[in-house]
Image (cartoon, rainbow, N blue to C red; front, side, top):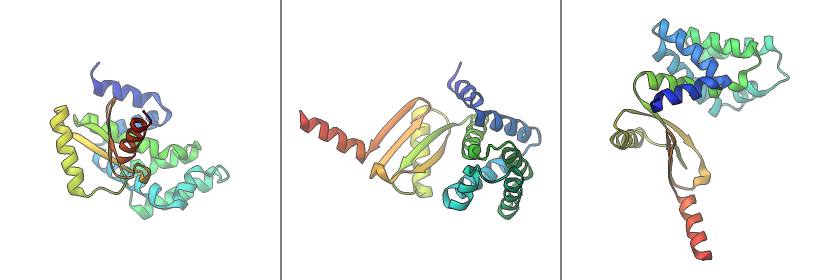
Length: 188
């Protein structure tokens, strides 16, 4: 089994992966993979940027009906595609809105694998510019021999540098790790 098949099997095994796989199949059938991927990108950004939206997805005291109404309103305001809107409604109806970010991440991995890309999780202390993201993707492509989609995260605790996870490989070039290694070496 090649790495992309293994990644697809891992994605499908999780609860979020099952939702993402179903959404991906529907999107592929209706030739809407790019539209769904763009909509899910907006959803991921909203989950990061809006404490209210993030709270809605994790608040168990919100009724199914209220959650569905709220998600429908948010989807309309964000101009999400119909498949993503329906999927968010299903997640709300099944009380699985907390899985929204994981579904988006799993969908992105499926879409990238379908395009023949690998996905790299890049963590930095500060937001990467478009030029930096492009340069990282080019370096990773040269290393793995195929296109690499970048899924970036911000974690100020790494202080600086980057950590990159691609497949089962972790490249940790963070200042935090370097300082920890130096501290260990100084202890003798």
